[in-house]
Image (cartoon, rainbow, N blue to C red; front, side, top):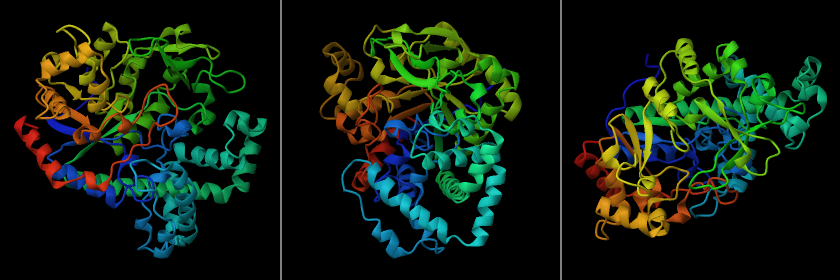
Length: 498
């Protein structure tokens, strides 16, 4: 039985996070700039737009450490759409001021200025609008009620993680929940309003993308943050110690790229307990993701077959060990609960034959990353001549350096092999040769980060796994989206039948 999906039509794609759209207020948003980017994709003959998780960011501004597996990032709400109905005055929007005109996302500016105007818009919404928000909240009650509680209580305790809250609310005692619901009602209403606005604007944007024949690939992290509404509301579904902290934690074993492995710190699931209630929490999550996206990339797919568990007090991920995951039974349960889901498997990292077998049995396309192709022999699965049509080819992902950055810093033997294999030349430019390598392959879908089409170097890298500092900050600028670039992308799509 195939639990996945629809075959993906042959096409080209661009990877660009929503936050990296060229927003004039310090971050991308769901308004004009997003529609302009969709127009650019349409002119370029692009079929797929891949984004990163659209959830609120957490530690280090990472979308993979979100306070919610369900919520939308309120910082991505377009404020300009609130002016015409009168929720915001034009002069107040101008008072926000433009962030510095560089290629960085300015989270400090966004937090200080944009949230202030979101609160003004919330105060100015008429009663009819409030009623609409309430109706929306009732339809999303399975996750929204606990999310707005979590955010309001977290604000009240000045950002402290939930496992450091007073014992009664930490353990969700009914009297405490009622008391905080009454005390923080206005703050909870504000967060409900933000979610209503985010998903209203998201639906408009998705509709616009479909009108332009663009399909959206979303990203679903396997794990959730230790300090999240999900874990506070469902502690019994996660492996936690008596204080509510994760024990053990998620990570990955040592490999060629990280000799000590990685400790991610996320709580691990109580898979057997989840199975007892037919993975209901996951089914609700998948149903929402299927509504949002045309295709869903499952981050760390191999964790469903087996996951790396690291002791909470370990100094290195080397101390971890493999634990069997839920495997096919999970996907069968989701299929029975909500029907087919159009998944893409992020099947990178330490893979075994059983991981490949699970992916193939489910009929889910996997990923082939060109940057991984040049450190072995001709049987390296990431070399294009070893691709199959039912896969997604990438020049690189958000966790890789850009193509130009990789070529500049790769070991000499890998660089030499890449130049020879792809017939790279200065005249074509090396980054376009890299794109050609993915686009010319038999893979039904070929995707490159926006930075690769622009030929940008390591300064434009989105994320360097295992580090804190400059990650998640690169921003596209309006001047990058030229008619000449759209024409060049359209030509390579046409040349290779995309």
